[in-house]
Length: 191
Image: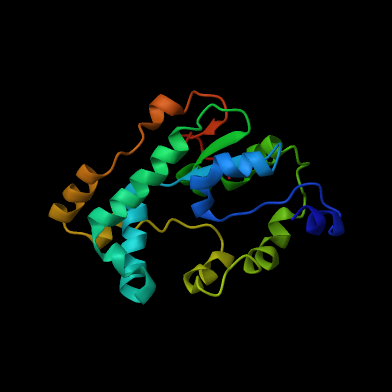
């Protein structure tokens, strides 16, 4: 990754595999100075998305069980929570990114030590399409502008919603939003 970064004339490379959340200690040992951006989405919406994928793609079948999907989210949240406040870690609330993308990404670039790129928004579609793996066809719609695509309330009846909420160990963002290196403010829309 370092060599590819140098060949491209860049000083930072980004790797986006969500499963690597569970290998942060190992990554830190092998990539000195690595920085980590934890994007945390509302667990209810994650369960709804995983459940939708399970209905469309056979490899996602385990997520038809909403309790299983909720536990997957809980496990990821517990892994992220361990790193909140540690140097080299930035926690970004997904909903903040959706509501204020320019402001949030400016903060992410500062955290990474990158200069704000004026052409970032123009280059996004061609760069983003290179990040979509063959086994992730649902991400093709990511080339469109940012939009609200909440599915939880539309996907489950009231009883299922209650079961999912009870199964989630969701964060109280008021507890975390004041901490350094946490971007969780959804109150101010500036984009």
